[in-house]
Amino acid sequence: GAVVSQHPSRVICKSGTSVKIECRSLDFQATTMFWYRQFPKQSLMLMATSNEGSKATYEQGVEKDKFLINHASLTLSTLTVTSAHPEDSSFYICSARGIRDSYYEQYFGPGTRLTVT
Amino acid sequence: EDQVTQSPEALRLQEGESSSLNCSYTVSGLRGLFWYRQDPGKGPEFLFTLYSAGEEKEKERLKATLTKKESFLHITAPKPEDSATYLCAVNGNAGNMLTFGGGTRLMVKP
Image (cartoon, rainbow over all chains, first blue to last red):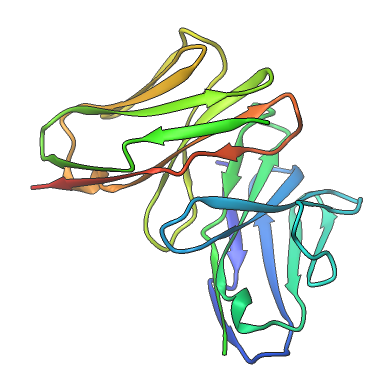
């Protein structure tokens, strides 16, 4: 139980284009989903927190207009990287906090490797 | 502001050589301390949640313990497949977010 999926697992796009990443909780309902970014050999950096049906809360320094987050249902959140540039290349990971399990446990997706050329 | 420090940054063990990873934390009211395992190119895999000092949890060769200031992840008789980065995180009263430590990269040689 408590499985989170991400799609796609890898994506290569050209500079200036937009990319959408999906995060789904497969066997539980997620009231809250989180988006992280991870650089090589570094720990996870929280980008934003999203609650179903409401606007995402972004961490300081994260551009809201560049990283659009939508949490349309209790099982799906999407991250859209708009007008991507090479510096946006990174490993993006989502996590979901379930309402059926212990309230404070977060389960992570497998990650999406974004490369902007 | 919640803070988490993990040590050592890297640990090399021989197969069967038991050891412990440390996670020191400061938090404004602990809601939970979490241990995750992360393999290269993958998302973190949930291992344990600890909620209060004195609590212990075990899973196969791993055992996590918690005090008011730190948590230990004990690895008994590790195998090469235990090689990974182990992440510690806390959730304090400030909000729903997790604060992560820098991780400990464990390498177990046969």
